[in-house]
Structure formats: structure tokens, C-alpha cells
Length: 228
Image (cartoon, rainbow, N blue to C red; front, side, top):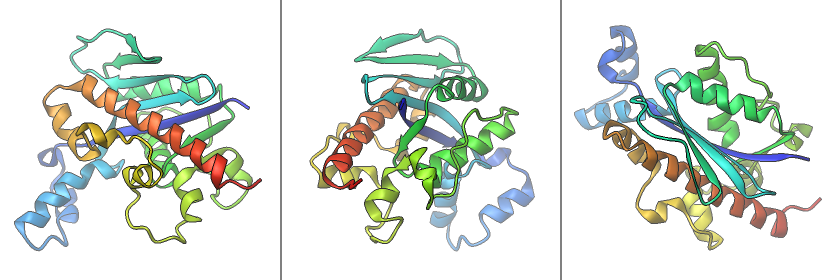
């Protein structure tokens, strides 16, 4: 069946742009200036206080993919690097439309922690942008829905039974001697600053790195762990 790996990159909204009640709610349990700052940095993790700046897709059978990424200035051109097509988009809405138009062509999806993060984030941000998904990616995790969506984090930890800590792709890559995109010096924590610095292509390339790492992790899991 046609399979698609996908990954998203997000940023938080400007804290000062939020209404006073929302600010109060976000900082409610912060007990120090440092904790307040951390809460602001975590805005990117919620689809209510963040937005999508890149979505990467990769067909693991053809090793061809694409990254749809935000370029608010509209100055970058579509181009390809190492079988990944980089497509700049003016808005988040355009990114989401590109993703769902492609997603409807596939029958199985592969992610790392997609059930917890990518899928609900994409679904909610799409609703906010008045876009209806073309695939139901948020099915019940413990049934045959796994045939539609293979979440490698769920599979590797037996749905959280293995307490390895954070949902960290880098740690799993290190354990299985797989190249991690973090090896090049960029992490998900840098995305917000990269966006502020207008380094949009850097974000897109980092997203592509996550795609290749997820593909290699999937192949490792399928070869040595997945018992059919």
C-alpha cells in the first residue's frame, strides 16, 4: 500500500499578542521569571498557541519527498535537494492545504510520536484555518487503526509501557546508530529563533532531516522488532 512518512515543525505565537486571560492561564503555575520564560517558550507545543511552519513528507518506497515551509516574504523559490522538493508557502493555510492534498493519495502513515503531537496539531490547526482533513489520522491507537498510522514511538515503547523519558527521536537514533538531524547542531528548540531570523530554508532542511531519521528508524523497527 502507498505509505507516507510525515513530520511537522511549529513555532509559538507572540506572547504579547494573546489576550490577558490567556496570558494569565499560561503563567498560572509559574513561580519564577525563569519558569515564566519557559512557559512562553512552550507555546509552540499547543495548536491553540502555536502554528505550523513546516510539514515534511517522504515516500519510504521511492525515497522522494517534499517539505512545505513558511516563507512569509515570498522571496524563496521552489527547488530540490537530494530528492526532497522544497516548496515555500506564504501562509500556514497554504502549507496545510498542500499536505492534505498529498495525504489523500496514501493509505498508510508513519510518524514518530505523531499520535501525541503531529496528528492532533495538524487537525486542530486545519480546523482553525477552516480546512477539512482528507485522512483521519487520529483514530483509536490500540486497534486496527495502527494499520493506517504507524507511530514508531508507540511501537517502540509498547504505547508508553517502556519508561524511557521524553519522546525524543534523537535518543532512539543514537541507540540504533542512526544519523540524527540533531547531529548537525539544530534542534526543535531552535525553530522559533530560526523563524525570527528569517532562516526559513534552515527550518525546512531540519524537517527533512527528521524525515530521513524516521525512515531509518522505521526500517530498523520493521526488520528487528516488528513481528507480524
